[in-house]
Length: 134
Image 1 (tube, rainbow, N blue to C red):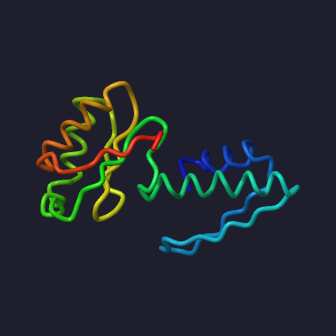
Image 2 (image 1 turned 90 degrees about the vertical axis):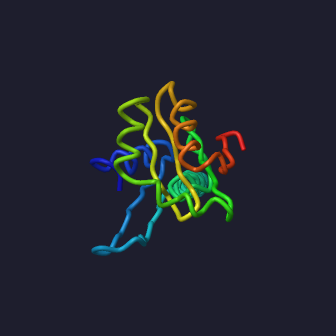
Image 3 (image 1 turned 120 degrees about the vertical axis):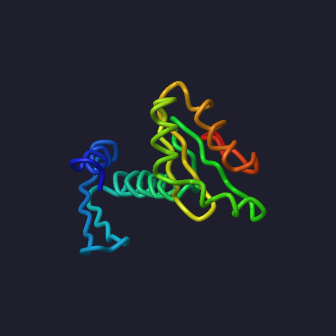
């Protein structure tokens, strides 16, 4: 869960709750146990739900966007490959990654718009851009 548990530690500090994450071997699912005062537990739940929304592409990260590809543009999704994402990173220093069959997240650095344009070009300009602000 994050590099060196950094996100886990951030969640604990920001919420004031004690958080234990239980994962199974090779599982995409996890159980999250939360303890503490009711207000801290509620804040932890909100933070975790926000993180899950970002990881799944339902919500854009603060430093990026989500490209939502419509049904008609899904034929272009096979173009979204690791080598393409590496090339975009080398050119823009912004990262891009597929998070679902119809969503690509682009984030990090001042060149996000340039990285978005590159991804959009490979998607034949079919994607809708979801901003952090909604």
